[in-house]
Image (cartoon, rainbow, N blue to C red; front, side):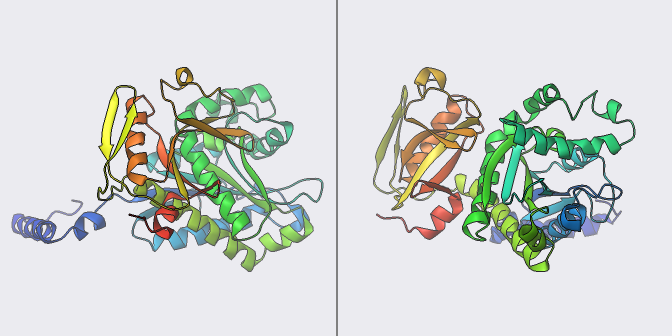
Length: 378
């Protein structure tokens, strides 16, 4: 404890705490370690970001970040850390350090896009090799911020934001978190397009320095194009910023609740057998009509042949292409108990970071949404 207090007070405090734990589980929930979200408003200070139509990217990004953070701070499940809360220039490597020091569960960087045409739409990036020149150019614009920093060559080990070769070394560090990053990015883009009716330019991979610096699932959200006359006006408006921030908030909550739902174990009902190689278990039925559960075991830009030898002996394989990215799945069932057991099988086969996902009408939806909106059939 930070303040020195007497022994008797310590003893009384312990008695109160232990008594509370003996009568209710509520204390366990209240004292549960919070889900840490680091919010990063792009640019700042002497770096305005893009100035499409005279708007300032740094100001719009900050307003959206503060709105997202204010809402999450009202939810006891979350702890919010900001890389900046004012119009201040923060070096890219410092933004990553802030997230790593906070031991964050998520890192979300907010930006606005620009183009020489009237291009428009939202897109969410995860760290990876850019599949085309367009993705590289987006990353190059954001990475060029390091040229404004003092001693940038030392801070980034000679990284050149204008060199495609420099990007390759960035991707290795985030590979462990790619699947989770892609899931969050999918939630963000789905909500932008389905709820706000914004044009979705998809989930993409590119080499962003700010994402490279972090050791947790991380995404960079481009809210839209300030250079587009209509979209720029929308993003610069209070209405636009409120709508975009609420959409991001809900995506973060969906992601967090989906992680929680992965560890939810419903009561067993009718027994059912799950088998894979030497692993055989009995599970109960927990059927959800119109929902298909799968275990996501891998993701990346490579198109891998669906054969057990390529997936540590697992069968029951499928894959879905999301833009430039392939996601690989194990199992397919409407039985939630069964998919939980299949996840255990995948973990035993070496896919320790795998997780359960849900599809409805062949569209990926948040797992918690699937469990809440569909009553299990007996």
